[in-house]
Amino acid sequence: MAPMIVFWIAVGVISAAVAGLILRRAARAAAGGGDADSTLPLYQRQLSEIEDLAERGLIAADERRSAHAEAARRLLSAADSAGPAWTISATSRPLLVGLAVMAPVAALGLYLAFGSPGYSDRPYAQRLDQWRAAPPTQLDAPQMAAVLRSVTAERPGDPEPFRFLAIAEMASGDAPAAARALREALRLAPDRSDLWESLGEALMVAAEGEVTPQAAAAFQRALEQDPTAATARFHLARAQIEAGEVEAGLTQWRALLADLPTSDPRRPVLQAAIADVAAGPRQPAAPAAGAVGAPEIAAMVEGLAARLAAEPDDAEGWVRLVRSYSVLGDIARRDAALTQAKARYADNPQILRELAQAAKAEPMR
Image: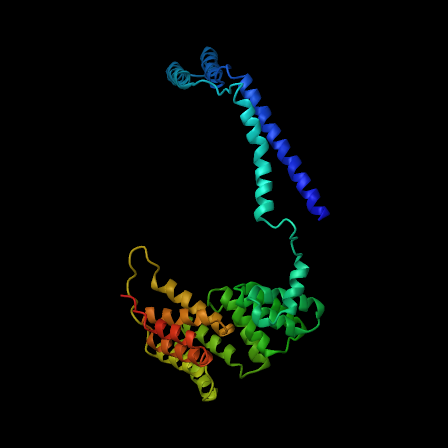
């Protein structure tokens, strides 16, 4: 409690000093209440300066008359609008002093009555220890990321804590931090294909779903370590399709589909993607005035789909994805996402109801 007593003494001293400063300035203002308005001498000096410039030949006669008239107008306006200076009567001064003294006292009393002056703040290290002792299911994503950062500091030679940290950072919405964690993991285990795939996906999420050259390079490194890496194959083929190499990309997707086991939950998504691209480009509806255009909406939905591919344990994200496909009228992808989400949350009736409702969203007109 001793530090708290020192704190409140310091607060009282500062409050008293502020009150004294206010009273001093108020008294000075009252003592100088009869002084003339300070703006009037300013305009008078402007008039004198205009005359001086005219006599030295620095301004023309027309400019002199115009400037002189404007300065005179401002002088007259200031003189007309000048009101009486603020003053305070002798009988009101005790009231002012009392209010200045009572304000900090009242604030302290209210805090003592309703606050928690004896409850000290918990240092970050103490909160971190509490998070580490708690079951992981009780932590949100930022708290889990904080715990895993401490674990990586304790085990700097182990790539697994960095991999789990990347997952937590991704769930927190910080894709660049996830990419940094994955690069640390790859520094320790450069031959792990799954880490290269995760890095490519993190870079894609940071780029709002775009397969950037950096992401493509990460996927290529994944294939060098494991030629069957499904995630890397899927996104590299998608990059080919988006670059105009549609047939080459479809060939890669069909080969990937043939390699996936029939029980793989990714098959419906891949089948819907193949059918969508094979059907050819669709004529996008013209966006309403002031609305976000179809390409921008599609990019945002692609970004959400890529994020869920990297971190699928996001029930709210799956509901948004299903609703987005419904609004876009993309029935094939909606059904594929719905099937995958239902399989993941089969034991959660609430999420299943939200998914069913999202699938019924009306498409844009």
